[in-house]
Amino acid sequence: MDSQKNNKKKFIRNIIFTVIIFSAIILAFKDSFKPVLIELVHTNPVIVLFVSLFAFVYICVEGINNSFVAKRYEPAFTSAQGIKISFYNCFYKVVTFGSGSPVSAMYYLNKCGITPTIGLSITTFQYIIQKITIAFYATVCFAVNNKLMLKHYNSYCGFLLAGYGITLVIVTFLIMLCISEGFHRLLLRLSNRVLRKTKYKDKLDNLESELSALRYEAKYILKNKGCIIRLFIGNMIKLSVLYSIPFIILYGKSNFTLFDIISVTSFVNVLTGVLPTPAGIGSTEVVYTLMFSALFENILAASSMLIYRFASYIFPFMIGGILVLINHKRHAL
Image (cartoon, rainbow, N blue to C red; front, side):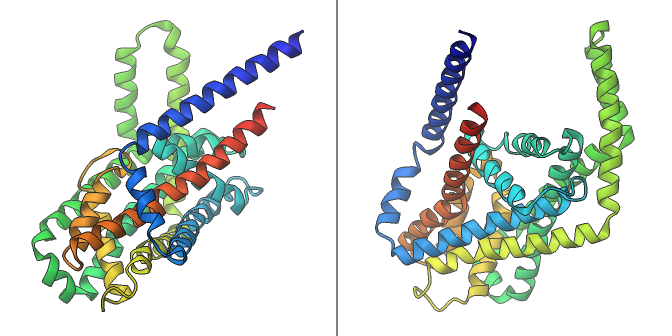
Protein backbone atom coordinates (compact mmCIF):
# COMPACT_ATOMS: atom_id res chain seq x y z
CA MET A 1 0.00 0.00 0.00
CA ASP A 2 2.79 2.42 0.98
CA SER A 3 4.62 1.50 -2.21
CA GLN A 4 1.58 2.39 -4.31
CA LYS A 5 1.24 5.74 -2.52
CA ASN A 6 4.91 6.53 -3.07
CA ASN A 7 4.65 5.63 -6.75
CA LYS A 8 1.57 7.83 -7.09
CA LYS A 9 3.40 10.75 -5.41
CA LYS A 10 6.41 10.29 -7.68
CA PHE A 11 4.15 10.20 -10.72
CA ILE A 12 2.38 13.41 -9.64
CA ARG A 13 5.73 15.12 -8.95
CA ASN A 14 6.97 14.10 -12.40
CA ILE A 15 3.83 15.49 -14.02
CA ILE A 16 4.14 18.80 -12.11
CA PHE A 17 7.86 19.06 -12.95
CA THR A 18 7.18 18.40 -16.65
CA VAL A 19 4.33 20.95 -16.77
CA ILE A 20 6.51 23.59 -15.10
CA ILE A 21 9.37 22.94 -17.53
CA PHE A 22 7.18 23.10 -20.64
CA SER A 23 5.42 26.23 -19.35
CA ALA A 24 8.80 27.90 -18.83
CA ILE A 25 9.91 26.86 -22.33
CA ILE A 26 6.77 28.33 -23.92
CA LEU A 27 7.21 31.56 -21.94
CA ALA A 28 10.90 31.86 -22.81
CA PHE A 29 10.54 31.16 -26.54
CA LYS A 30 7.05 32.44 -27.34
CA ASP A 31 8.40 35.28 -29.52
CA SER A 32 11.70 33.91 -30.83
CA PHE A 33 11.39 30.21 -31.54
CA LYS A 34 9.25 30.44 -34.69
CA PRO A 35 11.53 32.88 -36.62
CA VAL A 36 14.61 30.88 -35.56
CA LEU A 37 12.98 27.66 -36.76
CA ILE A 38 12.05 29.24 -40.11
CA GLU A 39 15.60 30.51 -40.57
CA LEU A 40 17.04 27.08 -39.71
CA VAL A 41 14.87 25.44 -42.37
CA HIS A 42 16.20 27.85 -45.00
CA THR A 43 19.85 27.54 -43.93
CA ASN A 44 22.37 25.13 -45.41
CA PRO A 45 22.33 22.01 -43.17
CA VAL A 46 26.16 21.95 -43.16
CA ILE A 47 26.21 25.43 -41.63
CA VAL A 48 23.64 24.40 -39.00
CA LEU A 49 25.74 21.32 -38.22
CA PHE A 50 28.95 23.32 -37.81
CA VAL A 51 27.43 26.08 -35.67
CA SER A 52 25.83 23.41 -33.46
CA LEU A 53 29.20 21.67 -33.15
CA PHE A 54 30.92 24.93 -32.20
CA ALA A 55 28.18 25.66 -29.65
CA PHE A 56 28.66 22.19 -28.18
CA VAL A 57 32.44 22.68 -27.95
CA TYR A 58 31.91 26.10 -26.34
CA ILE A 59 29.86 24.58 -23.49
CA CYS A 60 32.26 21.64 -23.16
CA VAL A 61 35.23 23.99 -22.67
CA GLU A 62 33.24 25.77 -19.97
CA GLY A 63 32.54 22.41 -18.33
CA ILE A 64 36.23 21.50 -18.40
CA ASN A 65 36.95 24.82 -16.68
CA ASN A 66 34.39 23.85 -14.01
CA SER A 67 36.01 20.48 -13.49
CA PHE A 68 39.50 21.98 -13.23
CA VAL A 69 38.51 24.05 -10.19
CA ALA A 70 36.18 21.44 -8.68
CA LYS A 71 38.88 18.73 -8.77
CA ARG A 72 40.86 20.74 -6.24
CA TYR A 73 38.11 20.05 -3.70
CA GLU A 74 36.79 16.73 -4.95
CA PRO A 75 39.53 14.67 -6.70
CA ALA A 76 36.90 12.23 -8.06
CA PHE A 77 35.15 15.04 -9.94
CA THR A 78 35.34 14.38 -13.69
CA SER A 79 35.33 16.54 -16.80
CA ALA A 80 32.09 14.81 -17.87
CA GLN A 81 30.42 16.00 -14.66
CA GLY A 82 31.64 19.54 -15.27
CA ILE A 83 30.28 19.48 -18.83
CA LYS A 84 26.90 18.18 -17.62
CA ILE A 85 26.70 20.98 -15.06
CA SER A 86 27.43 23.54 -17.78
CA PHE A 87 24.55 22.21 -19.88
CA TYR A 88 22.28 22.12 -16.81
CA ASN A 89 23.16 25.80 -16.29
CA CYS A 90 22.22 26.60 -19.91
CA PHE A 91 18.82 25.09 -19.30
CA TYR A 92 18.11 26.79 -15.96
CA LYS A 93 19.46 30.09 -17.25
CA VAL A 94 16.61 30.13 -19.77
CA VAL A 95 13.74 28.80 -17.65
CA THR A 96 14.58 31.16 -14.74
CA PHE A 97 15.50 34.12 -17.02
CA GLY A 98 19.09 34.11 -15.79
CA SER A 99 18.53 33.99 -12.02
CA GLY A 100 18.71 30.21 -11.51
CA SER A 101 22.00 29.42 -13.24
CA PRO A 102 24.32 29.97 -10.21
CA VAL A 103 21.91 28.11 -7.92
CA SER A 104 21.73 25.14 -10.29
CA ALA A 105 25.54 25.03 -10.48
CA MET A 106 25.81 24.97 -6.67
CA TYR A 107 23.06 22.33 -6.45
CA TYR A 108 24.71 19.93 -8.90
CA LEU A 109 28.19 20.57 -7.46
CA ASN A 110 26.74 19.61 -4.08
CA LYS A 111 25.37 16.42 -5.64
CA CYS A 112 28.96 15.66 -6.67
CA GLY A 113 30.26 16.07 -3.12
CA ILE A 114 31.18 19.77 -3.08
CA THR A 115 29.64 21.84 -0.27
CA PRO A 116 27.40 24.82 -1.13
CA THR A 117 29.97 27.25 0.33
CA ILE A 118 32.73 25.94 -1.92
CA GLY A 119 30.23 25.73 -4.79
CA LEU A 120 29.43 29.43 -4.32
CA SER A 121 33.14 30.26 -4.34
CA ILE A 122 33.69 28.26 -7.53
CA THR A 123 30.73 29.72 -9.43
CA THR A 124 31.47 33.30 -8.33
CA PHE A 125 35.16 32.96 -9.14
CA GLN A 126 34.35 31.50 -12.56
CA TYR A 127 32.00 34.40 -13.27
CA ILE A 128 34.63 36.96 -12.23
CA ILE A 129 37.27 35.44 -14.54
CA GLN A 130 34.73 35.24 -17.37
CA LYS A 131 33.79 38.94 -17.08
CA ILE A 132 37.47 39.95 -17.01
CA THR A 133 38.25 37.75 -20.01
CA ILE A 134 35.36 39.21 -22.04
CA ALA A 135 36.64 42.74 -21.42
CA PHE A 136 40.26 41.76 -22.14
CA TYR A 137 39.34 39.93 -25.36
CA ALA A 138 37.40 42.93 -26.70
CA THR A 139 40.29 45.26 -25.80
CA VAL A 140 42.81 43.14 -27.72
CA CYS A 141 40.49 42.90 -30.73
CA PHE A 142 39.86 46.65 -30.70
CA ALA A 143 43.58 47.43 -30.40
CA VAL A 144 44.75 45.00 -33.10
CA ASN A 145 41.82 45.59 -35.48
CA ASN A 146 41.42 49.29 -34.74
CA LYS A 147 41.08 50.39 -38.41
CA LEU A 148 37.95 48.28 -38.94
CA MET A 149 36.53 49.10 -35.51
CA LEU A 150 37.08 52.87 -35.74
CA LYS A 151 35.79 53.00 -39.30
CA HIS A 152 32.47 51.32 -38.52
CA TYR A 153 32.01 51.70 -34.76
CA ASN A 154 33.69 54.92 -33.68
CA SER A 155 30.42 56.24 -32.25
CA TYR A 156 30.07 53.17 -30.01
CA CYS A 157 33.31 53.73 -28.06
CA GLY A 158 31.36 55.36 -25.22
CA PHE A 159 29.24 52.22 -24.85
CA LEU A 160 32.39 50.11 -24.82
CA LEU A 161 33.76 52.19 -21.95
CA ALA A 162 30.40 51.82 -20.18
CA GLY A 163 30.72 48.05 -20.61
CA TYR A 164 34.18 48.17 -19.01
CA GLY A 165 32.80 50.29 -16.17
CA ILE A 166 29.94 47.87 -15.50
CA THR A 167 32.37 44.93 -15.61
CA LEU A 168 34.63 46.67 -13.08
CA VAL A 169 31.71 47.36 -10.73
CA ILE A 170 30.43 43.75 -10.96
CA VAL A 171 33.87 42.22 -10.42
CA THR A 172 34.65 44.53 -7.47
CA PHE A 173 31.28 43.79 -5.84
CA LEU A 174 31.65 40.02 -6.26
CA ILE A 175 35.17 40.02 -4.84
CA MET A 176 33.94 42.03 -1.84
CA LEU A 177 31.02 39.64 -1.47
CA CYS A 178 33.43 36.73 -1.26
CA ILE A 179 36.45 38.01 0.68
CA SER A 180 35.55 41.24 2.54
CA GLU A 181 35.16 40.60 6.26
CA GLY A 182 33.83 44.14 6.75
CA PHE A 183 31.13 43.54 4.14
CA HIS A 184 30.17 40.30 5.87
CA ARG A 185 30.00 42.04 9.28
CA LEU A 186 27.64 44.63 7.77
CA LEU A 187 25.49 41.84 6.31
CA LEU A 188 25.31 40.07 9.69
CA ARG A 189 24.53 43.33 11.50
CA LEU A 190 21.63 44.01 9.14
CA SER A 191 20.43 40.41 9.49
CA ASN A 192 20.49 40.71 13.28
CA ARG A 193 18.37 43.85 13.13
CA VAL A 194 15.82 42.32 10.80
CA LEU A 195 15.73 38.87 12.44
CA ARG A 196 15.72 39.69 16.14
CA LYS A 197 13.72 36.68 17.22
CA THR A 198 15.56 34.02 19.22
CA LYS A 199 14.44 31.27 16.86
CA TYR A 200 16.67 32.74 14.14
CA LYS A 201 19.81 32.77 16.33
CA ASP A 202 21.01 29.35 15.14
CA LYS A 203 20.49 30.32 11.51
CA LEU A 204 22.43 33.56 11.98
CA ASP A 205 25.24 31.68 13.70
CA ASN A 206 25.27 29.26 10.80
CA LEU A 207 25.33 32.19 8.34
CA GLU A 208 28.35 33.66 10.13
CA SER A 209 30.12 30.31 9.91
CA GLU A 210 29.27 29.98 6.20
CA LEU A 211 30.53 33.49 5.44
CA SER A 212 33.77 32.75 7.26
CA ALA A 213 34.22 29.57 5.20
CA LEU A 214 33.36 31.51 2.02
CA ARG A 215 36.12 34.07 2.77
CA TYR A 216 38.65 31.32 3.33
CA GLU A 217 37.78 29.40 0.14
CA ALA A 218 37.58 32.52 -2.03
CA LYS A 219 40.96 33.80 -0.82
CA TYR A 220 42.44 30.38 -1.45
CA ILE A 221 41.24 30.40 -5.08
CA LEU A 222 42.27 34.03 -5.69
CA LYS A 223 45.80 33.38 -4.37
CA ASN A 224 46.23 30.41 -6.72
CA LYS A 225 47.84 32.12 -9.72
CA GLY A 226 48.12 28.86 -11.67
CA CYS A 227 44.38 28.32 -11.36
CA ILE A 228 43.62 31.89 -12.48
CA ILE A 229 45.90 31.61 -15.53
CA ARG A 230 44.47 28.22 -16.48
CA LEU A 231 40.89 29.51 -16.25
CA PHE A 232 41.78 32.67 -18.14
CA ILE A 233 43.26 30.64 -21.02
CA GLY A 234 40.25 28.32 -20.94
CA ASN A 235 37.91 31.30 -21.21
CA MET A 236 39.94 32.76 -24.09
CA ILE A 237 39.54 29.45 -25.95
CA LYS A 238 35.84 29.30 -25.09
CA LEU A 239 35.18 32.83 -26.33
CA SER A 240 37.20 32.22 -29.52
CA VAL A 241 34.93 29.27 -30.32
CA LEU A 242 31.77 31.31 -29.62
CA TYR A 243 32.97 34.35 -31.57
CA SER A 244 33.79 32.19 -34.60
CA ILE A 245 30.17 31.11 -35.05
CA PRO A 246 29.06 34.25 -37.00
CA PHE A 247 31.98 33.71 -39.40
CA ILE A 248 30.65 30.22 -40.20
CA ILE A 249 27.15 31.62 -40.75
CA LEU A 250 28.38 34.47 -42.97
CA TYR A 251 31.15 32.57 -44.75
CA GLY A 252 31.41 33.50 -48.42
CA LYS A 253 29.08 36.50 -48.03
CA SER A 254 31.89 39.11 -47.85
CA ASN A 255 35.65 39.66 -47.81
CA PHE A 256 35.82 40.12 -44.04
CA THR A 257 38.33 37.85 -42.31
CA LEU A 258 37.77 35.50 -39.40
CA PHE A 259 39.48 37.97 -37.06
CA ASP A 260 37.25 40.79 -38.34
CA ILE A 261 34.10 38.84 -37.44
CA ILE A 262 35.57 37.73 -34.10
CA SER A 263 36.40 41.37 -33.27
CA VAL A 264 32.85 42.52 -33.99
CA THR A 265 31.32 39.64 -32.03
CA SER A 266 33.55 40.38 -29.03
CA PHE A 267 32.26 43.96 -29.20
CA VAL A 268 28.68 42.60 -29.27
CA ASN A 269 29.34 40.58 -26.10
CA VAL A 270 30.66 43.60 -24.21
CA LEU A 271 27.82 45.87 -25.31
CA THR A 272 25.22 43.23 -24.41
CA GLY A 273 26.34 43.63 -20.80
CA VAL A 274 25.44 47.33 -20.94
CA LEU A 275 21.78 46.47 -21.60
CA PRO A 276 20.48 44.73 -18.44
CA THR A 277 17.90 42.16 -19.57
CA PRO A 278 17.11 38.75 -18.01
CA ALA A 279 19.58 36.11 -19.30
CA GLY A 280 20.52 38.46 -22.14
CA ILE A 281 17.11 37.87 -23.74
CA GLY A 282 16.49 40.59 -26.30
CA SER A 283 19.70 42.56 -25.80
CA THR A 284 21.86 40.12 -27.76
CA GLU A 285 19.51 40.20 -30.74
CA VAL A 286 19.36 44.00 -30.80
CA VAL A 287 23.12 44.59 -30.38
CA TYR A 288 24.12 41.82 -32.79
CA THR A 289 21.81 43.07 -35.56
CA LEU A 290 22.89 46.66 -35.00
CA MET A 291 26.62 45.86 -35.11
CA PHE A 292 26.54 43.50 -38.07
CA SER A 293 24.27 45.82 -40.06
CA ALA A 294 27.29 48.12 -40.31
CA LEU A 295 29.12 45.39 -42.28
CA PHE A 296 26.30 43.51 -44.05
CA GLU A 297 22.84 44.20 -45.44
CA ASN A 298 20.17 44.47 -42.76
CA ILE A 299 18.38 41.30 -43.89
CA LEU A 300 21.60 39.27 -43.84
CA ALA A 301 22.55 40.64 -40.42
CA ALA A 302 19.11 39.78 -39.02
CA SER A 303 19.05 36.26 -40.50
CA SER A 304 22.57 35.49 -39.22
CA MET A 305 21.52 36.74 -35.79
CA LEU A 306 18.75 34.12 -35.66
CA ILE A 307 21.20 31.30 -36.38
CA TYR A 308 23.70 32.75 -33.89
CA ARG A 309 20.95 32.89 -31.26
CA PHE A 310 20.10 29.28 -31.96
CA ALA A 311 23.73 28.21 -31.53
CA SER A 312 24.53 30.29 -28.45
CA TYR A 313 21.20 30.05 -26.64
CA ILE A 314 18.60 27.58 -27.89
CA PHE A 315 20.82 24.62 -28.81
CA PRO A 316 22.67 24.48 -25.42
CA PHE A 317 19.29 24.92 -23.72
CA MET A 318 17.86 21.93 -25.62
CA ILE A 319 20.80 19.68 -24.70
CA GLY A 320 20.59 20.89 -21.10
CA GLY A 321 16.85 20.21 -21.00
CA ILE A 322 17.32 16.64 -22.20
CA LEU A 323 20.00 16.05 -19.55
CA VAL A 324 17.83 17.60 -16.81
CA LEU A 325 14.86 15.40 -17.72
CA ILE A 326 17.05 12.28 -17.83
CA ASN A 327 18.58 13.17 -14.46
CA HIS A 328 15.18 13.91 -12.91
CA LYS A 329 13.69 10.66 -14.23
CA ARG A 330 16.67 8.66 -12.97
CA HIS A 331 16.35 10.05 -9.44
CA ALA A 332 12.55 9.77 -9.48
CA LEU A 333 12.64 6.01 -10.03
